[in-house]
Image 1 (cartoon, rainbow, N blue to C red):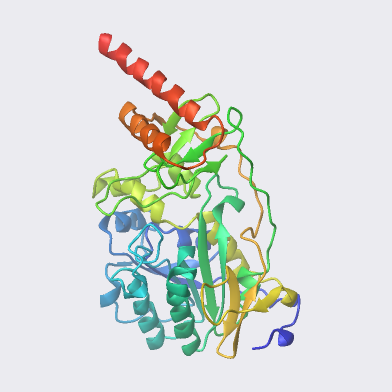
Image 2 (image 1 turned 90 degrees about the vertical axis):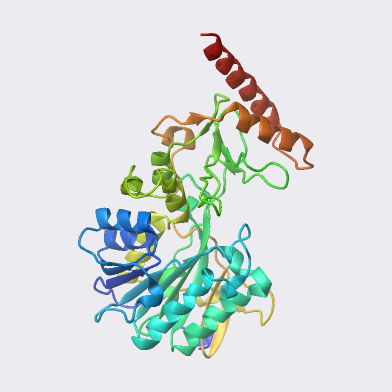
Length: 401
């Protein structure tokens, strides 16, 4: 494939909605967005009992296979395979063992199934750190496997913030196909948008109160990327510094909404596991508006501008967007903002009362942050200190009562 042979701005004809197999489905974020675009899911595969409970309640009637390693073949007639495969071995905060890890290495099971039945379309999702981990080895390996299967591919890092959600969440999406142009799906839309600047007292600001020494996860008028919690299942919600100076942890229902789900989407999980497991499910999910956009483009592709193509590096970390096949690979100059849609302000987005950050949590964060060499926004630590005095006084009043 040579860029000069790509027809600039020439899009494929519209397609009919397609049948989906959702592997590593989680709570169905990828598939829900595809459903909203007219596609239908024929099979889920999800090993977590609590996630399977959500799928069973929200997608009634769709079978859920529990273990991808025991799935012998994809159902006949499947046209799209989706796979938000585990990120634990690929994330910066994880084990960074790459595809050699027992979790992220499960992507090889997707390849096994595709070798047995060649499905026309494939959609993968994971963390963007995989583009630089070990010189981008994991992504290069995935691209090679996809090319060996005869697919043409495109990938791109996109930020959920540009889809009308008050969350800064970058994820890399890859679309591969043997019957179309994936760049007309992933790389046709581009609407770069400016991120808001820190404005304490007017805008809400999200941060991770569990950090403070080497990072903060700071986000203006948004929360930083929602996490799937610790390796031992402890939830890790962010904190939000509200314009009035109060610091709260958001309600799980607002966290679901920050991913584009309805409030209480994960409630069925509480019937089979600890209620706190809902935070992990939400943190691992795909943002629904992103997959809805993908689903719409799969039905109605748009033309791609070949002038965006650049040289693809033969070694080292990979570009944040690219396209290729077995005859060549090309980096693509494009933003993380396909749609450029701003959410309403975080402070007004919150629908449910948040839990004030506790005395212990606030003291721990303030102590770490005060000793750190990090540069914080002017007035931020003062706001933390004021919150600490407020919650300490409130606790003391309650004790006296």
